[in-house]
Image (spheres, rainbow, N blue to C red):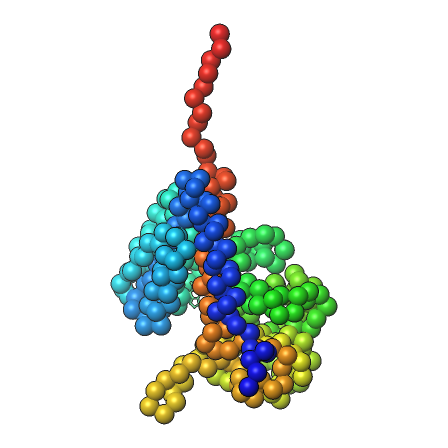
Length: 300
Ligand code: GUN
């Protein structure tokens, strides 16, 4: 079987990371060591894996990473206290608060406490608003990674009809904003959309981000569409579990122009873009930090 129409997210991520490594080295030459603080509250097993992967990837890029593992019963006040400390620490350039949070902590209050300049997830309302206005802010990693894969596959996206399936704050909504910024015609489908398969069949680009295993099959896809599958769903397969996307890959593959696999598609790009955002945050803070004062020569 040809693999020409399978989008290689690992290779794309490796290209992003290679550039990040080069740029981190240049920043270190100037005396700035980019630093990412990662906060994990509780013991959610999937979150623990994600955090470990983020820390490992940071090390590979020579980005300093500091893990803050807090107990499941940490109070909101204690979490906000830690965030404020990290905001004020000039050695910390990026702060990532792993989601989901335990139910007793208000997610929005915690995300809003992170300084927008250090918000490497791009979830702060100031960054979300800036993204909608087309400003060059820190944008969410997964949608930014999807855009990179789409540009690698299609080049110019102008005028194409993109259908985003799902309207989450983390993926669906920022994805729609980025596609609009790239001059696509954008449709967002959600649980109340009528006849979603027929609407999706009109799309040149499909971004699936619903979190329902293999919901989208060939009947939803126009021949020649490019499909980006953001879903990471754990399903039981006999006596073991495996990962599948929101798209039924085997049914879609013969129909599409190109499609991301799960795993190995969007996932690696998300972490690569987190490293890119940490570097960008460090570069911007290094530019705005007050430089040590030059000795003053007085001429009498
Ligand atoms: N949990 C699932 N996805 C994400 C993400 O992109 N960022 C954070 N902080 N938590 C997540």
